[in-house]
Length: 88
Image (cartoon, rainbow, N blue to C red; front, side, top):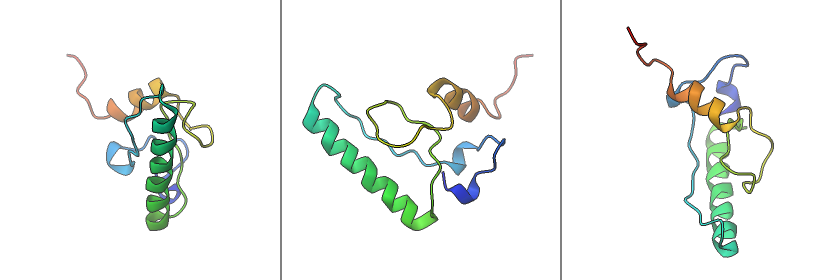
């Protein structure tokens, strides 16, 4: 998400984040290299439009970049369960 939108301690809503994603066969080095390059280009596009980005989560250690703010399970629990109805 854009760093300017991030407020420490607040959980961003799903409409405040960008999903930069590539389906990749990790067993194929050429596919990993191609899709890593694609991810970097997508991130550069958003950075150019919105400024510095904050990495909230990444799905694999093969994806370059700093440590994300949330581990995968924490990210899904916080982002996707916001606003859901509680059981009666």
